[in-house]
Each structure stands twice: as C-alpha cells, then as structure tokens.
Image (cartoon, rainbow, N blue to C red; front, side, top):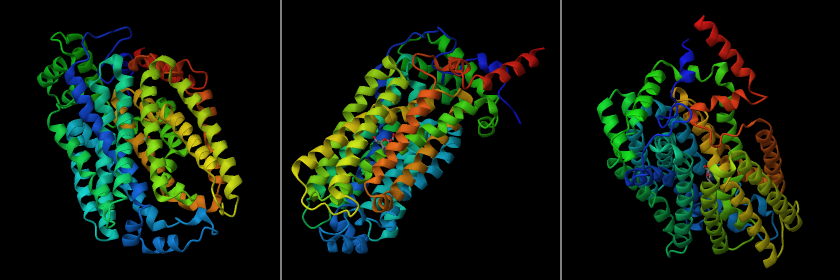
Length: 522
Ligand SMILES: OC[C@H]1O[C@](O)(CO)[C@@H](O)[C@@H]1O
C-alpha cells in the first residue's frame, strides 16, 4: 500500500491557494472570481430548492390525493380530537422525500472519480443536467413511479454538485476569502430553500390543485441556470494541473487573480499537485492511521449536523405545523418565515467565522439550539400531552413555538449549517481532499435520508419526546466539539497538521508519523 510520503508534510497542499506558512500570494478579488463564485454556488441552490420544496408539496391536499390517497384519506378523516402526532405517518410518503438522498449518496462517490478525471466543471455540469431532467419528470408525473424516478435523477444532480462545488470554490478562492467563499455554498442552499418555500406558498393556492406541478417542475430553472452557467466557467487551476494542462492552468490563474505575476502561487500549486499524484489510492490512504483524527471529523461533523434535527423543520415545517393544528396557509407562512431567518443568520456566519472562530460558533449555536428545543418540548408537551389532542390552540402558543423555532434555526444557520461543510473541507491535505469531501457528502446524505425517513414515525411514537431526542444529541455534539475540535481559524490550510499535533487528544497520531519520517531519512 502506498502511504503519504513524508515530504508531502512540508509541501504545499492548500488546495493550491497558498503553500508555506507566511506566504501571501498577490492578487485581487476579481470580478471573474466573483462571477465564478456565483455560478458555482448555484450548485447549492439546486440542493436548497429541493430541500425546501418537498415539505410544502407533501402537505398539499391535491398532491396527496393524487399520489398518496391513503395518507390523504387518513388526513381528512382525522378529527380534531384524534392523535395529531400520527396523521402523516406513511413510509411511502417519506420514501418520496428520501429516495433522493440515497441517489445523492451513491452519486457523490462516483463524482469523486469524475471530479479527478474530467474536472470539477464537468462534474458540476452533470449535476445541473441530471437535476433539470429530474425536475421535468417530476413536473409531469402521473404516478408514484415517475415521482421516484424524477427524484432519483434530482438526487444524482445533487450528489454531483455537492461533491464538486465546495472543492471548486475552495480552489478558485483567494486565500483570504476562502472561508467566506466556502460558506457561499451554504448561503445558496438557504436561498434555494427560501425560493422553494415562497413558491409553495403561492402554488398551494392555485385553483384546480395543479400547483404542485409548478413547484416540482420549477426545479428545472435552478438546474438549467447551474448547467448553462458552467459553460461560462473554466476549470480550477488545480484541476487543470491534475490533468497536465500546465499552460491553461497558468492562464486561468492569472485571470482569476487579475495579475500576470502568479509565478509563486503557480509553482506551489504545481508542486502540491505533483506531490498529490504520488498518492495513487486516496481511498486507501484516507483510512491509514495518520489521518484518523481528521477522518473522525469528516464523518462526525456531517452526522452531527443532521442530528441537530434542523431538517425536521426544513422538510416538515408545513407538515409539523399542520399536525399541530395550524391552518394550511399558516403552516406554509411559518415555513417561509423560518427560511428567511435561515438565510440572514447564514450571513452572520460569513461575517464572523474568521473573527470568532469555528469553535465559538459551534458552541454558541449549540447552546442556542438546546434552549429553544427545551422551550419547544415544554410548550408542545403542555398543549398536546401524550394524546396528541391539543383542543383549541391559542395565538400566544403559536407565536411562542414559531419564535422558538426561529431562534433555533438562527443558531443552526450560523453554526452547524455552514461549518458542516467548511470544517471537513479545510482539515485534509490536497491529495485526499476530494475523497474526504465524498465521505462528508455521503454521510450528510445518509443521515439526511434517515431523518427524512424516520421523522414521521418518530413523531408518532416519541410525540413531544422527539424534541428531547434532538436536544440530547445537541448536548453530546457540543461536548464533543468542546473537548476534541482544535481551532482552525486563521491557520493556513497547509499548516493544519500543527493544530492536530498540538491538541492533547490527537497529538499521538502524529508522533509516530514524524518518527517514521525521520527513520526514512536516516
Ligand atoms: O439550511 C439548512 C440545510 O442545510 C443543510 O444542513 C445542508 O448544509 C441541510 O441538510 C439543511 O436542510
């Protein structure tokens, strides 16, 4: 087995942006970088659009009546005195939502090969195309099979996009703006969710009950924007070098940095890419002991991101509100409010992440989410009890739940939301970064799937205890961050090994590597 050569530890590896510590490559934040960033980030838009659209559509009566008549019949036969927690408990319905995540999980693994072999841009184009085709099939769906096929294609699109966009953004970003540009991906996810909720709010009111077709088919727009946008992009210098296109890589670097003299950065980038080529099997390499600490985080961070319970609100806010006795309109309206909060709070993260650091945001966000989960648990328990029969819901109650939810969402949006992508992307060296990104996407998808699949059953069985479950998870993950995550703020990406070496829990994984390197030199 080929392991990472010792000399790689001292070589450039910052996704090609910087190399040795203290280096500060010249260059500007050019309009080309800005445009490229917007187009690439629209890959987040397709993910967000889908995240936001499914919940609203599955709470539209005309949609349920056509595709899930059993759920629909159950829903209309439920009397206000029945158990409200269980009215949406249908595995077929949740399979509609979750099939996409399974497809995305599979495709993100394939995408890592395409990203390396054909480039980031090509992977993104595949993403946009699959997504647009899936949207058309869904918009014209006549039966559940068409719905599922459409969603599987959407899932392929999302898997390809999520695998390639964050890497692409990191590679074209000037070093100083890497954090902010990475979070642009999450920001566009929140924009996608917002647009989708807005659309659902109006399509739900369309006479004749075909509004859901507009909602599902509307996904073709972000899909095509992303697809055609990619024609205007050039691949990242890293990706071009990876495929031995030296001249093109240099010209591209000069264009995105807005200067001619990119010699220093280009040379380091070429060195990093040569060094990375020595690692023949990134998938095996990533499993070796020396990457254990980073690997643990690449798996646990996306897992924990999902265990915050955020997606329960993203997917099911309208369903959840409906189960709690809010009217149709009020449910979609609350979903709209929460997505606006999600968007603005992500901006806060962009502004603060490099100032206060990842750990502070994680811990503050965790505490905020925990307090809100407790408020929601107590208020829902007091009104719905275990019978799930609330009687008349007073206005103050609805307000309290919506406010608690908004504060919870803000906490998520400036912590676990964006950091769930940022941290895994900045802790790995170049040679295994692409494989690590696939792992992070795959874990994210598996648990997004699990939450989507089991939520309605959990609500039906755990009742208000569902919120306690997520609260306990938030406590656990916050303790984990507090004890084990080294602060990565302001550390050049190629210097990242130092933060692990200096951490009391992880240093032992690096001692051995140093020794073996030294031994090799003797
Ligand atoms: O903004 C909320 C959204 O962000 C994600 O966590 C992805 O980072 C999704 O799983 C969630 O729906």
